[in-house]
Image (cartoon, rainbow, N blue to C red; front, side):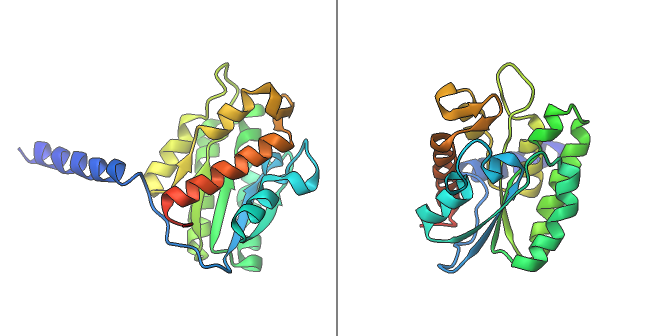
Length: 203
């Protein structure tokens, strides 16, 4: 009886969450600072520097968006790098697009999951809100590994796990097998903007 009751409560809470469109964010002030944290997909490898998604996102939203992407970085290194940037910039929001190099190098998924979890918690401990994008792994379907959704669900973080896989399936939006071109990064920036609007961070 007790177990059934608890399951019913859990189901209702899930239904409420789904009905509300998923986890929400507080509205960002007009002078908000956004830290776009990641690897080469954040840096903008494959396109001119002014075409990187953080630069485009800044133009779309009018916010200050810091490009903190480091090409080739694995999540363990990102986990070590993030605290200093949080202290330096005191961002209102962290956009986490990381972990792709872990899968390319066939690192243990459990380690990537742990590092992503720690980065979300580090951002929140520094007073920032956090949103995530899933990065596709080494699979025929180019789908994002399950641990992205797991971390997002556990920590109640807005996530878009479908955009990057979709963009990277489209050869016309890629500069090479693993990076986008300028058109692809613009589409990525537009998807991030849409995620923030849906979560309530932007009007």
